[in-house]
Length: 486
Image 1 (cartoon, helix red, strand yellow):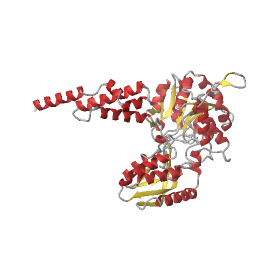
Image 2: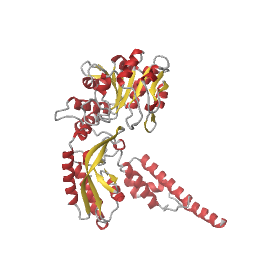
Image 3: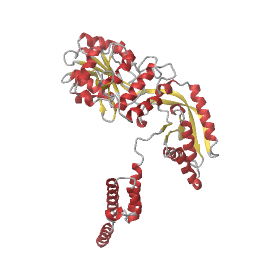
Image 4: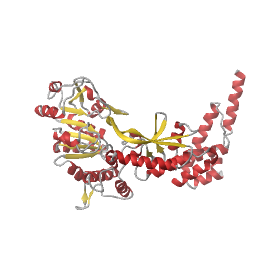
């Protein structure tokens, strides 16, 4: 056994020693072609990566070709991936309207064009064109936000976690913050309210219990152990049963009596009471009317814009947050500001042909309209191939994005099957289309929810399904469809 092992080791070493050198690979005709499209630095790096991978494969005994042809092919694959920088556009057929994994809110096409124009050239990001001197980047969103919330101070930063962090660092650094134990939420990733508090320099003062918190619990600490009251709306879960929470109006009055501010992390970005969507989550205007001193929320959820965070509330508190040096580290870039201002404009024009943003339209579209679109899509799919089994059924979508947990959006689903093809393989093939179509499996079947399809995407879904069901002997036809769609 030892001799055999030693022989294999020496053989592996011999093969590694015979791997082609970088200089030799650089004169290969296929590599020379790559050098006409990529810088020498990039090509050399890809060659070295491919050689390292080949050495590791040989050392582990996994084998693998180590000749020049195989190395060049590996280099070509590496560089081909660089030809498609991400993120990639995908078609959301899942029925989850604010899908975090798929980029949350899609921008209004006019907003997207505005962002593209701003990104493609110079802009007046911090330049006052009227005065001919340095200006403020907040000027590009302030007027629109102030029209949405008259009489309030407003400030935009790069996401809602940043807005909360900035408010706590400004108003409660080295001080206690009172929060109910039932609101110590984890939103996802590393966003946990206790950790945000710690990073802000504030001190956590827990009150109440997980399921029941009373006004007296806050009263015992406000003004003594805590200099700020924080209420975090549980946007991605609900506690039901034997529960009690303190309404914002009562907590705001208590905080005012003790001379401390009340900050509410509303999260989902539902602006108004009459906005489309779930009624359980309080609107920003409602929280302000009930006495919250500051409210922070996301720009890319129910607001329907880009990733951003907005602080709105008492002018003097917002001004203090804006003067905090941390605000510079959390500021929005020019593309975010362009998208956010246009999204706010759409809300100001709600009720006209220009508004509101796509997320609100998806929430507001009637079930009859969704059903009609589902029927048209199902009929078109059925005509593609005789192996397709298609039906339209009742179903539920979701708001998504950590908003409105448990709130079902009634919809109509296009249920899809292919004789001789498993549902997981069908789902995978749709996802490999260009652009990818992301659907879901429900009760062992692939379902497509037309509610989350944007204008013009029905045709992409049809092309993806046509390509997915092509028989193996006509695989080239599937590739042709993908090239045509691209």
